[in-house]
Length: 529
Image (cartoon, rainbow, N blue to C red; front, side, top):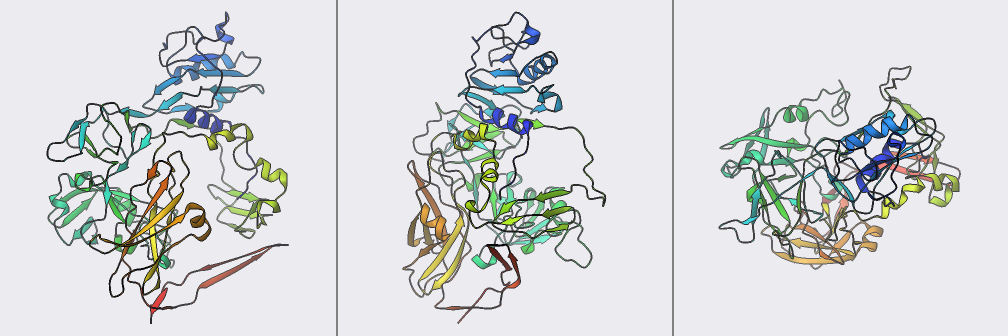
């Protein structure tokens, strides 16, 4: 969707701070005799008791912000906060508000260098081999780190240890009853977290969670025998949401259903020692305050920079308090006006979402050039979109693999492409068909361009009178091949299928030179012959 550009200085500042736009500032730059009118200079080696000038920089972002606010009151032009090269570590976000937008038409600009880094991470050091687990290493958790979902090794995000839930689950008011006591026998089951991903039955992907756009997570509080108690209030927040009377599956004041779908089934489980089985995976033992990691090929933990994410955000942009309620009392009315998009939602007013004057387009050429030129990130900051922010690596694994039968000896596989390419474009994907015991029976590869065009890979040559099969997918770039995705749900290829039910709810939207058609797929998708 193309939307008109909006003035958003705080958002632009956030992007500059998070990514460090290249600039010409240096700590040894021009000094000023009149410090209260000068630009502000910051360095990781500075001192917050200093004046914040080129020869005497301050150390923290918070002190630099306060000086910039004070100096902006007297400035007769733009004021720049110069961030010298180096890493600025912070445990709390830099809070910016209306005072940080400048005065009298002048701006406050935060300017980094090509190697300015603002980090909310904590270094993990002191790695040693784990006795009895070849290839596995452990290190003390950094002081103050109680939990995290992200670990980076030399700038590359590692994968939190994950896998299929090893037992069957039946939801209860406080958690689950399991088909075996497997989880209760794990080292620390209360470290583990269930993940609930949505899916599409049309492609044999389970619909778990609280809606197509959600991915709830709940940690295990206790595992005793075959009884799992889940952490509160996460469990009640996910299962005791008030629904509209007479509208099953639609919660009041929230999107999605009133409880976890598919009987509360979890898509997979993360963060357990027992799940460490792939290079590049890590686990945080919260009880022993220990981080475990299986290094990837070529990684040397004696020299690697390992960082655990600690701060939830680096910049907190706040605006002037405004009452956005409209005359009907809607708390957050939104006007979508004069947009160009492919989907083409018709004009209307639904609970404060007002759409009017919108256009359907078949390509960017349909939209006026001025709209295209001004859409998205402001021109001055578009270089951020092509800037590589992490180290070169293999891609992250594709996700949410779905399958569909093509006949007795073939399957279609579809999936979410790798959203982190590793600083090098993904060249292709390989889909592997596996028996339930994990042995591979067939594989098929497609280029990234072909997958973008088709949105599926055909896996042929499957043995007849065998199966069902699951499918895993790997991605490849110039650096190598990713770890495998989580497996799809099992599917038995059939000789032929026919649609079981017709689609419902067709909607036709027309414009002068284009039209869109939308519909709801059938709940019952196929019936084997």
